[in-house]
Length: 151
Image (tube, one colour):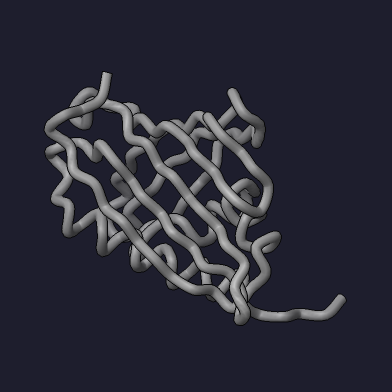
């Protein structure tokens, strides 16, 4: 049942990297732990199974305070190098409901156009904080996928 009190954020970015590399960053546990946590947080992927019906469990830890929160994602659609959809749920009743994250990758002349929609964000999370966190994460994603490192 959707969280009708939740918010939606939409993000758009062009990355100077091929869609294959960007897609891999979304389904590789080590990559997710590196780029997804916003500034000031560390991330740990506890398990990942990158297939439809599979998913991942991850936690973010505030580096300053040591406080952490965890969430689970379940993949509902995986179209390699084009589209990822997953349902996310926080592991606390303080943040109820299930979010839907849709990631669309489109090859463009200079790399990959990335569009992300995160819907049904729990009402207690300020939408502007969520948006800021995603902006920070996408900056880190660019630093991971854009460099061309030989061999």
